[in-house]
Image (cartoon, rainbow, N blue to C red):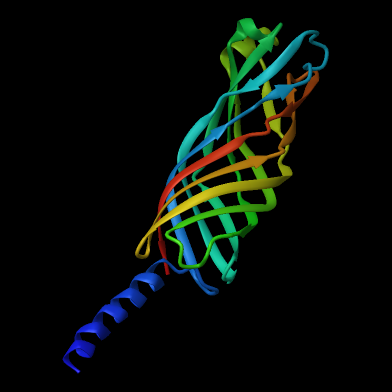
Length: 219
């Protein structure tokens, strides 16, 4: 009986340890950390300017996501972030202008994710598919672009809806989560440059990777 009394606490601790890592239906994961948008930009020519192009620099900011488990192996995740600011640069025949403007954007994304490992696994890889909506705002043309176009230039970029894929890995310590996720968006947008007398147009394939290195908690 004495041995049984010593054994039962060990069993209890073992069950608690397993449950600490378990991903279950109804769980809510909240993660936050460093997010980086790595633009793989490729553009067509700016209309009426042969050999020209537009590039988009990468940007970092605070990112976060929320995952709700609708099943032990499936979760719906919402990705959000503080606004990212990107420099726009001239390419080709516009390369001599250097920076031609800047723009901010937000990339809210919803994905359905699959977690293939056992619910009790401390290491949880996952993959998912979903949709991204990117909204652009605070577009601003640089002085060099305005001077090149006769003193006036207003830039605008169209919002975009794009398919999204995600791959990630969580490492669990009790209810804390150390995670890494990589998202890819097939994101295309049309940009316009209004000179007051003419409107120049260019299509830009941004197709970014969004990387999120985070710390989270499971509720």
